[in-house]
Length: 359
Ligand SMILES: Cc1cc2nc3c(=O)[nH]c(=O)nc-3n(C[C@H](O)[C@H](O)[C@H](O)COP(=O)(O)O)c2cc1C
Image (cartoon, rainbow, N blue to C red):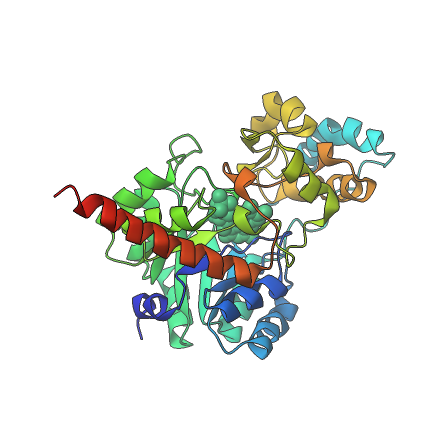
């Protein structure tokens, strides 16, 4: 079976976005069981725990699912760079009554080790963001019967993934919540709306394209399919689902947010990501280009974000969310997927009726 055939065989062409820090296996299983494709966010899974994490999903569903890794580069910053970054964060730590953290020994799990563990675990689908695999790495997944999906913010990135042998492209528009995948150009050149990106990527590569960014309901699903997407990937739409693990402060912030509240910021992690604007995002805006690159800054702000969450203070938390997050509704993830698909079918039917009358 090809990846296109796998997507076509899904009862519902909706992928649940892997959302590190916001979802884990309960949502993956719920969406796959409902007929969509759940994705396990495995960025925070240690290499030695990867097999158990993948087996954990397998044990709960016979349906296909995906596992996602973020490709963190193995950065080794100089002590002076860490001192400068920590000095910038010192007032924030002081406000929370915490000492500034020591220089960490490690900034993220070793990506190569995570990758090796994921290849061994052989999930049905493996997806990646922030960089690109080599052809040999893609081939290693294929040898285990796993499909590879590469995330792209630009046509050039989609072509690059096609050239290393990826089976599908996740085209992530600038509307998307969370981290953006860009790896060939800067954020400005890589900020393309989902409509424009989807229309151009589907022309440029001969692979199934999964549309992501700003899709919150059935009408968005129908629109993406009309533009040539083989399936959609929805993230923010699941943030208020029962299976989400975002906690009460983030969840309340989503409910309280004004409709145009999101910004792309580099301040929390050293890589541009979209979330609700809060005091940290606003006050760090002028220096965000100076903070160390991902995953270094992400690690340096980790204790701050965790303490703010514990204290119920949304102003120092990374409240990742997409541009259309105000449309997010509470519910059970499986039922949400089923309802969106029914709505998409109704929207498509209504569109056929509207357009055929004009012939
Ligand atoms: C809270 C949150 C966490 C995310 N974490 C990941 C992740 O771990 N890996 C990944 O590839 N994408 C991640 N994303 C991006 C999603 O895969 C997807 O591109 C995005 O949610 C689509 O836009 P939408 O939020 O408007 O639906 C995350 C998005 C959100 C909102």
